[in-house]
Image (cartoon, rainbow, N blue to C red):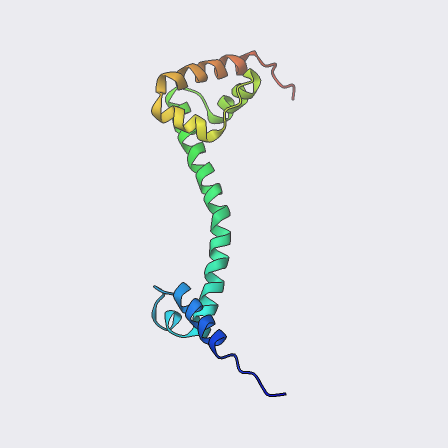
Length: 125
């Protein structure tokens, strides 16, 4: 049986790899071997950073809510605890948007949280 060479499949594979690696610096966009290595590494970063983005956004929302709470004379932890005690189920993203876009509504939410946190019984140490 005769040996079959890849032919068209090989050049299509090389073309696909180099098309994905377009824009990379130097050899990374010109040679198939280096381009494949770079694409694998890029995929790892992409996978990692999709999770990191979620983490970073939550940190941003918490920072914004903390700043808004401090402007109203309360702490972030007491504010969140007061919301839980009051039964208000708003996530951090919504709270940060409210704090930026509608400060009067955030004032009301903050007052409700303060009242609810004062109403809770003190812990006995």
